[in-house]
Image 1: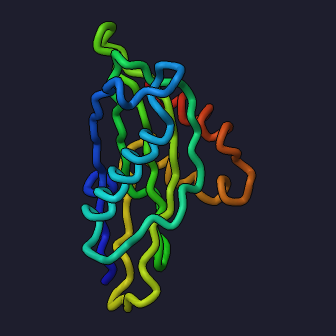
Image 2: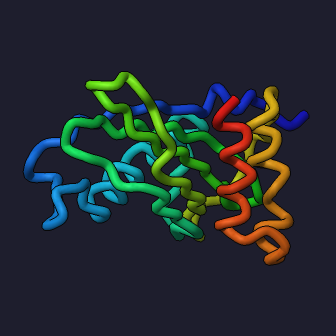
Length: 166
């Protein structure tokens, strides 16, 4: 019997304070810092999912939708969005929380692939993941259309924003 887990059991939500050393010449959050934190959070997602030796195989798409300012915090909310035979796709939603206005806005979307080392022998299939709410079902079910090119990254973001605003 194949193990099944709820996507919420793989989910990591992480908050990052923005300091002056994280800023670029435009006085907004440096994109490289964002990607560093993103890879770290997605690594935590894998560790919640399994003890197997996964590695970051690729950042499949990252859409910078808006900048993050010094008076904001970066929130990275990430979870397993698809399970393959030797790899998983991890989705991340990046938001900026403005401390002054108390408002949160979407600033980025990312899909990454994490894979198992070639040497690792799987004794059983990777656990399947179930999606229990409208937004996670949309993210997971968009895989085929995103990979076939039917749904571009920009189009995905437009559709995702409809769920995000709910």
